[in-house]
Image 1: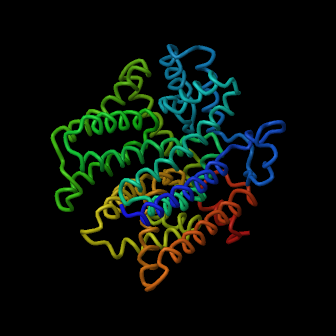
Image 2: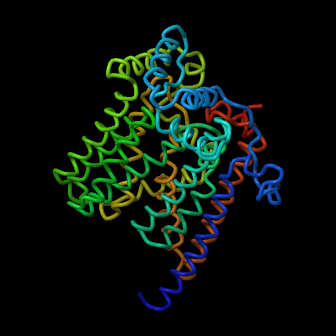
Image 3: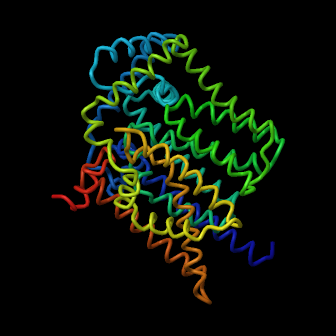
Length: 420
């Protein structure tokens, strides 16, 4: 590295640290700014969400954490059995306790810091949103260097759906972290073959993904498609060890769930009841349906500029753009499965696309800036700043001016005054 390049890299790191600090600040839950706290003096700067009540799902997660607090981890099979009994008698679906990792992390947070169960879950959601921001920067740095990491860091720091997930006790932001980690570790294993450290990390990430949420199926399908696509696009090398870990990791996660549920029969019955009751739930029928392009419509409402830029990048893909192809295939493969789930579409589930979409969007920004013969870095910085400002403004409109909770089309168009 030449001396000017070294100086530029140091400047990037300083700016990146500032952006990450802003991103972390935006992700802090409102409780962090309570009277007497260390952040009370800057509480007025934080865009607190208008919706502060406890949602239905949040109440269930809180109850599961409280059950762990009162009965201990050894009682988990009984918690699952109680769920099966209750769900069998209900007409509507309720979320299952086999979303273990989020519940257990909330229990650990409560045990360490002593806060109430719901607050513990909200802090966990915020914490994982911060981890996702850091992970997005790390991935981009590995794939494209510090300048790209700076751009993606800025776009992720102000992503409306990322900030929204950090402000509520919902699992989707936590799931996003493990999905993104699995996506990155697959890339690293394709590039660095027979490295047991990357293989071990990948296997553990897959196992933790499975015990976080049943949506791991969507990620699993996308990862398998990437392995198949590697034959033609040559992201790296698919080894026997990599294929084995891709299978063994999820199986380990399933084995953990079987143990926690008190047997395979209980686990199968839990998922059977969830699937059968979900299709009969009035709220799901009213809000979870739509055409295959519903996710595109919702993304256009929340992050219009990001989506337009990302689509522009997709239309200019070529075989030399390995990282962009990798991100695009992940989105497309998981999208194909997710848009066909009857009464099961919600933009919360698309939270895991935030980083890949912004990777593609920044790629398009770089191309647009390159059309100028001079000051390309300055133009790129101005464009990223403009997009990030629009993103933060979108969050303010959606979640601060309007009491947004569920990321469904009806609420989004109401928040944006498309429907009044």
